[in-house]
Length: 114
Image 1 (cartoon, rainbow, N blue to C red):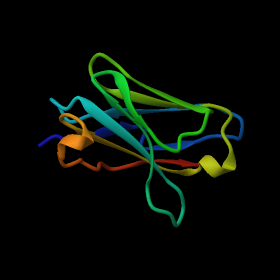
Image 2: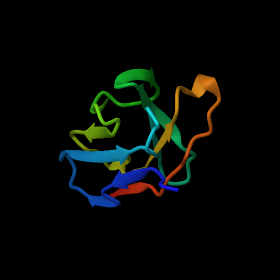
Image 3: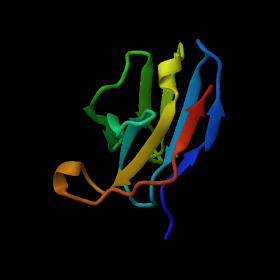
């Protein structure tokens, strides 16, 4: 079965640069969730989208923005990068929203390093 696909797998940036991460959900899934996992920490929820609209928002910095497109893939845009942004960025997808108790699929992550 196809899983969630993230690109790029690895990304190295300088401070103050911008970065874009892409997430392609499991075919048929309409909800996408973004998480950030810093070194030695658990995943922190950033933002989710359902049917191309923002569904929920967590601890996402103002420098970050995200959107979901008509094919349900999502992009996380990060600007004015800081050292603290170095982390694993995880994306998961589901059919419907988390409130409907669907299991999430956790894929291979993207890693942003300096």
